[in-house]
Structure formats: structure tokens, C-alpha cells
Picture 1: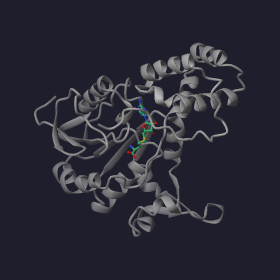
Picture 2: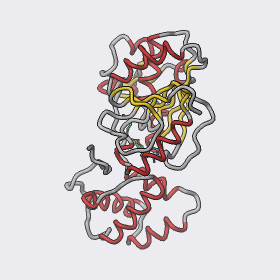
Picture 3: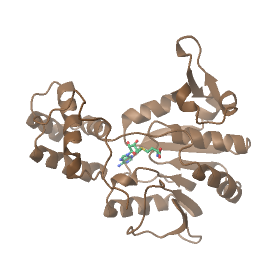
Picture 4: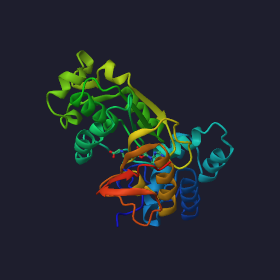
Length: 288
Ligand SMILES: C[S@@+](CC[C@H](N)C(=O)[O-])C[C@H]1O[C@@H](n2cnc3c(N)ncnc32)[C@H](O)[C@@H]1O
């Protein structure tokens, strides 16, 4: 079984680490809140790292005690305090063409099956900093230039979404793409932007970036031949996964697919999807 706890960036050498600002009781309050609001399952072993992250938030906001921070969260009506908390608690690790089997399956099975469904919509449902939705867009553009592709890319983290929406990536990151895709699908930065790449506007304009909380927001009304929801459910417990998979299934066309991360599992999760192969599930034809 994969771990179901959240992996946080940072180490104990982090200069922001300070165990005394966030006590064990405070950690319990944060864990409960993170579970209720975002579905994050923060286990006890993560207390030091969570404390370091929350301790840094306190300092950045000029607060002197956890109590002050907690009062701010409770009284905030703008949602901003929760946004900064989720930004601090999640890691947005991703990469171009991560888990390449999914991109092969998209080309060889899903496009032939749904090419007549125009526009051809794909939802990248925890898109982090955008490498996943851009990889999907480039894969489809390389396969069939006439396909009217529309990408919906969502994440809970506003910080990650800003990066994704800007869509600027360094040379090292785009190395993972086939070399001929860069000139075909990306603009190369010049001058101060040398060494950076971004998607060409004609592709970027077919992509929408939007905040979406997998555990509570209403799924979009459009239906998708495929939804990517990869490497996020590892943070969720079984009841949360059941809720998320159930609601994502509503957004999938009958006969369409759900991709999850290869290190994730739906075992024990209640769902109506058919197992196809590791990390690939299908909505049965005739299902609502
Ligand atoms: C490790 S990244 C995965 C990125 C990409 N899907 C991939 O596989 O490379 C996990 C992402 O899930 C997002 N996330 C965590 N909880 C979420 C929630 N409740 N709703 C939506 N996104 C969430 C995080 O902000 C983070 O960007």
C-alpha cells in the first residue's frame, strides 16, 4: 500500500524550523482543519515538517503565536488564510511527460475512440505547476493537428496555478520533451528570458486554468473522454478517495477514462469504474 500521508518539501535543516511555535495540540488542530477543508491526511510523523511550514507562515505574517494565527484563520472571511495554508502544506512536484504510459494510452486508445467528440476535452485535475496539462496539449498537437483540443487544468494551490497559467519553464525542465516539440510548440525566451520556454499562444489559448478543490467543488458540467487525477489521492484516506472518484466519474463520458498515479491505488475505494490496467480506469458504457 502506498503511504497516504502528505509528502512535504523541506528538511529539518530548514532555517524556518522551530518546534516550539506549533505545539502538538496546535498540530492536531491544523490536521483536523486540513482534513476537513482539503482532504489532506496529515499523519503524526509529519508533525515537525508541518510545524516548520506553519511556523514560517506565522513569521511571514508577522504573528507571534499560534493562537494569533488560529484566530486569523477562524475570523478570515476572504478565504485567503486558508489559501496560504494549503499553499504551505502541499508539494507541487511534477514533471513533463511524467508516467509516460498514460500519454501512450491517450494517443493509442483514447483519441481513436473519442476523436469524433469535438471539442476533445481533457481535465488535468491536480495540475500543480502545469507540466501535466502542457504535456497533454503537446502530445495531442503532435498526434493530430486538426483535433480541437480543450484543456481544463485545475489545482487547489493558487501559487501552483499562477505558475501553470504563466507557463514558463526552464531549459532543464523541458529536456523531458522530445527535442522537436520545443520549436514546434514552444517559444524560446530571448534576452533576460534566455533559457526559458513557454507554450505558443495558439496552444495556450485552448487551456483554462482554474482553482478547484477536489473534495468539495462541483465538477464542471462538460464531459471528458479522460480525466487525469494523478499523484494527489496519495494524500487522501479511503472515504475521501471514494468521494473524489465518485464525483470525478460524473465528469467522464461513458466509455471514458480516469488516470491516477502509478503509486496510487483505488483498493478499498467504492467506485463504479472498471479496472483497465495499472493506474487506468474506465467508466462503463451506459453509466450515467
Ligand atoms: C504532487 S502534485 C501532482 C501533479 C501532477 N498531477 C502530477 O502527477 O505530476 C499534487 C497536487 O495536488 C494538489 N492538491 C492537493 N490537495 C488538493 C485538493 N483537495 N484539491 C485539488 N488539488 C489538490 C496540490 O496542490 C498539488 O499541486
